Length: 281
Image (cartoon, rainbow, N blue to C red; front, side, top):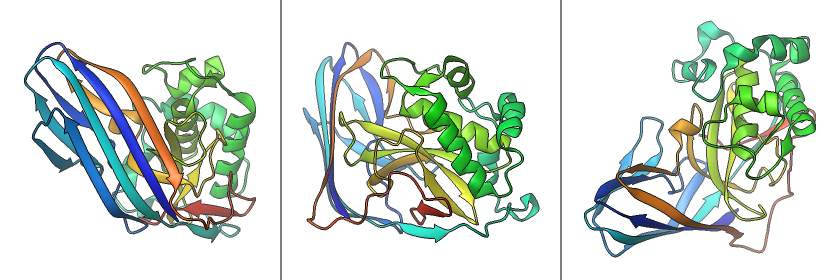
């Protein structure tokens, strides 16, 4: 599936400073960048760097006060894999690749250690990791209200359980924390989302089941095969849209993700009982 994605950001600088942006689509075996452009107005020299997590960052210095407009566009060819998890078993921690291990630990926004009892009381008796993740995702959908503007950048998974409201970021953090509490590796990622209304960046999570990363979205706001990945990490701290150093304010964001071809695969808003979707990496 091919998607046209774009983002337009406008900053206002009161002083000199540095910006590190995270809006470029990832290059992975399942996600090919066919065309891409990135522009800053007024022109500022920039460099692309790759984070420890593999995210594509753009860094540049702002030397003078004033308005800075950033425009990113890309044509992305994406593919997904449907996997039967009916026989998936719990992964042995002794045999997990070391790159997977950080996604088992509590992190800033995903305090799995604080949700251990809740996770095991609700989902501990379910007999397979995939079914556990399916069940906890459905539980979040049914018990947490999606409410724009209800949380802020300090809101954690523990807060979301308490307040029972949040946005996509909070839904993803809670899913990750519950997975990790059940000893299921889980990671956070952001992307451009097809059919999301209103258009915006979207956050979801992946759980490591059956030896691969499988995609889940408790908001059920987008088709699972309609996501163009931007960045991944332990939680939102690893995938911030913009890291700003200096007296610089992000004033406006405009985001889009449209189908670039007439054919579209069946729309999967959530996995079925035994099959999950993944973006091979």
